[in-house]
Amino acid sequence: MFLISQTSGKMYLRRPLDFDSMSDSVYNVTVEASDGELNSSAVITITVTDVNDNVPKCTPTFVNVTVDEDMPIGTNVSKFDICVRGLLRLFRFYQVDGCFHER
Ligand SMILES: [Ca+2]
Ligand SMILES: [Ca+2]
Image 1 (cartoon, protein in one colour):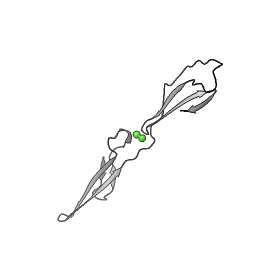
Image 2 (cartoon, helix red, strand yellow):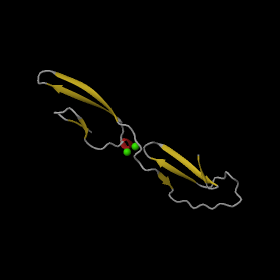
Image 3 (cartoon, protein in one colour):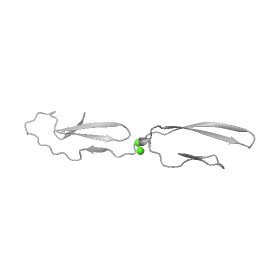
Image 4 (tube, protein in one colour):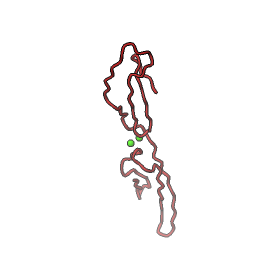
């Protein structure tokens, strides 16, 4: 996952990170230095944080609804889900009288 340059000591990513598919977001990397005679070590804790990198998905993508004209205001006309992968948020909206409301 990580690479440390032997000459500069800088740590680099070896491949792209994907928080959403990781089983653990914390890495402990042990770094050892030696002059051939004496040794020293340090532990570096790296925490990968989640960012909003996934497009929200609406399910279903198309809904055809028939509504009687005499339905009272507040009647639940249609409902769909918007799922934001990774951030574990689920929004539910319904539309009444041309306005969207969150559930
Ligand atoms: Ca991701
Ligand atoms: Ca993410």
